[in-house]
Length: 226
Image (cartoon, rainbow, N blue to C red; front, side, top):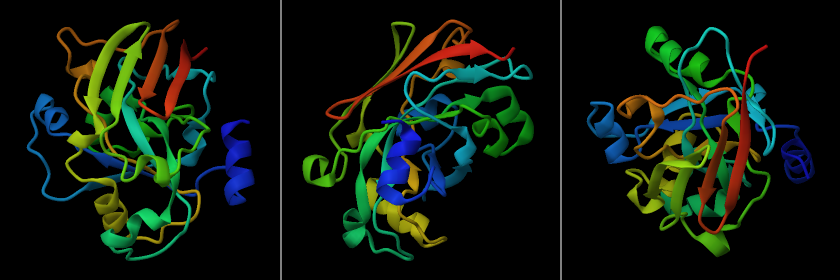
């Protein structure tokens, strides 16, 4: 089943209405970029037109010199709501899956905000498998890794999230109604390519794998825009 077939079958839409992303939600990732850990969740959006499934190529845009993958635990909303209390938040979760928050770094820095840099077509790979909360609870305690053409760049645990899944759902739904099929990408740990010495961008011909324990592996080839 493709990612869009899953969403159509489960939620009656071809793609999430909203892909809500969380910035700087691991202390080590904030630190590697020279930032302090935030006092409240930092939210931004990725357009649903970025969505692709496993095996579909991530396309490196011609106007960008450094594109990163970011390993992320993805939370899929099953029951919508507004101003959801953190104590009730997990009842609104359809399941967890594996996400990749692909990012155009030069554009991200130039624009001073993140929407364009995060929303190029193909910049939203997502695994079309949902593992329910009765198996994974609040999504903590899961090893999360990124491998770029076999080299491990990120290796962390979702217990290191600054703001956990219930907190993120409560915070996001305080601003806007969450709808069935919406996705929350919970943030990425340290080790992304831009902050390595020397930096490690994705290149034409690479394969990126995002793996989360007990959920699965999301694998995508990388190609340059033709």
